[in-house]
Image 1 (cartoon, rainbow, N blue to C red):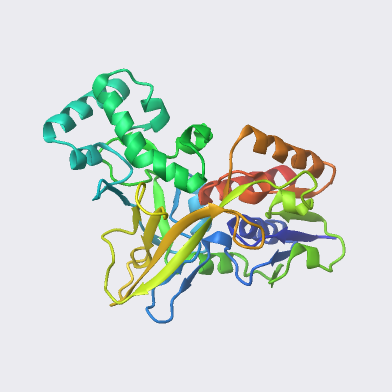
Image 2 (cartoon, one colour):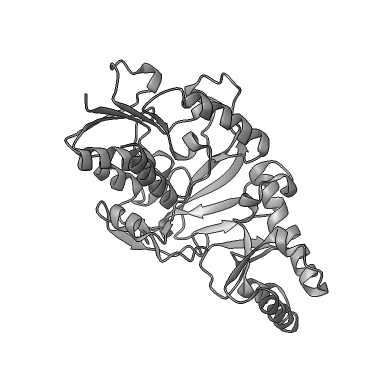
Length: 369
């Protein structure tokens, strides 16, 4: 039997299905409980405005891995795109990530000169310093800066996003929001950055268009009537697969208030963050992604919330020793089954950027095939 089952048609599942179909010339059944492919990177073109909307939040592809970039480039051309968001701090829209430019936008020239000189002297230029590490500094000026960033940029955003105090968040999460000692205003510094020219959905659809791939949408794994498979690659939640026998792994979710506005633009950049004001964390203006023209615009206002089964979607695994220990219980359960592989964010219970999801799919196939 050369039939493989891939559960989940997001980027991880699409890569696995495509490579098995192409490189092994084996049959693959690819299923997804949603009626669409692409998982949380799903996007669609709004009929009224012609604007491509990222339904589940902004997705900018970025990587330093040429193999990953070249692989995906077989299925799409790219809109070369650098994310340059801003944040509202004390009522002003300033550069994000917090960097040397931001310092000059917020403080007097004399203070900005002093802070820049001390930061470069202490850490060097072009260095990203996690905010909690910066708070350990004893220098009076840098102590002021670290406290300012912590209070005005990091603390309240983190509490809204994760529903906890910053000190309770795993360091791997806090490291994602550093101060960048540079005048480079790009949020990412990867060599390859872009957005699929016709959208992520079209890219994923091309990946799974293959005579060896049978795509079944709107089908839950539990409803599958097929007999046994040679291998099963499961990109859904590992605790759900085992019917929560050890308890549920917690996640944070998001709610999006999508609005069509009768104006050409709403804001001056694709994403504006609101660390301190309101209950939402950021506003995304979708026409910027592909530089689409319309006399109207579409925005998404993003509200973090607890994941509740049946109500919303799983977005971010909550990293903690307790949650990792619970995940390890499920992983041991999975080891009892031959040719059953858990992968992707939900299967690995880890936050993956899209490029890392592709890399992990490559690694998994290399190890198990």
